[in-house]
Image (cartoon, rainbow, N blue to C red; front, side, top):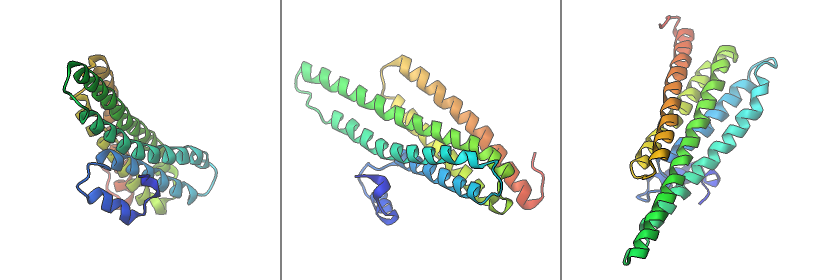
Amino acid sequence: MNLPELRIDQLLEKLASSAPTPGGGSVAGLAAAKAASLLQMVVGLTKGDTLQQLIPELKQSKEEALALANEDSQAFEKVMRAYRLAKNTDEEIKERRGQIQSALKAATIIPLQTMRVGLKLLKIATPVVEQGNPNAISDVGVAGLLAYSAIKGGYYNVLINLQSIKDQSMVDSTEQEATQIFHQADHLAGKIEKRIINELTGNKID
């Protein structure tokens, strides 16, 4: 199953099914891809060359996010396959345990990468909300919300996988990076939202 190739109605049907994939991690990736596309639209609607240099990075971010959405489902399927391995002998138990840990680590890195893409998009959205076409400022706001959702969704998936990983060094370093991204995203998303509300209502929010 290649998520980016599905029609929207097909994707929603897959999400609504009782199958565990695609799930929240894939949706986080798709949210980041939508954020990148919306930001590219606003840049395209903005006169002048100031923001045009952002387009290649936005295109790359969209492709990366789509790939991560797909990889998230594939990674979780590997986790499930590892849990289904035989455990009748000591050797099988050891092999199964190793496969599970390996699959969980891979399944953790992918949402962390989604968080990185989301943060990159929030950083791009910051100058776009300041310098972009004012008639499309609400679109920047939606893009910011999508990027922020991608980060929070990725964060939830990182944390739930870390609960089952035995490598404490990886757990600590991954949780530290994910939490830092989460806090940075909180700050940036708040700044973007204040700018938009101020522009649209004329009320100055502190």
